[in-house]
Image 1 (tube, one colour):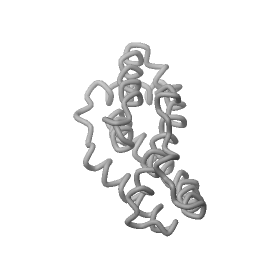
Image 2 (tube, helix red, strand yellow; image 1 turned 180 degrees about the horizontal axis):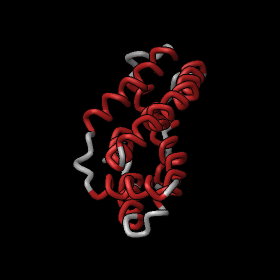
Image 3 (cartoon, one colour; image 1 turned 90 degrees about the horizontal axis):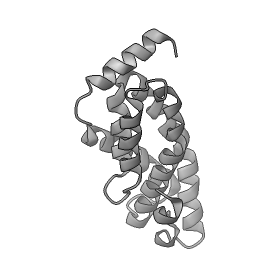
Image 4 (tube, one colour; image 1 turned 45 degrees about the vertical axis):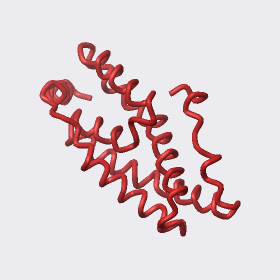
Length: 152
């Protein structure tokens, strides 16, 4: 990332406001609604719990790679890493919408389109996962991520 872009990112982080969790929840809800509809599980609360849980897993695993950019901001990096760690270690308190909102508030122009692309890419595997669990009997709750064992 060229120095002017790093400077803009640093300034956006410095001036960031509160996370827009309601807007992020709407985006996540729309994504998951489409996933469940396409998988034939619309209205299935257990499928929704599983899809939210799995979406959060996808986010925790893949979005950690974005810290490569943030590492280039040595003053901000430790604080940002600590914030992310807090969000990812408490899945009961922080769902996928919180992860989306956190990245958005760093620099909306950079992360909103990036997250939109990621959600589009994550939707087919989520849809297929929901459809497979349905085909195997629909026992979603026994297939949730063991976050303690995962280390988050």
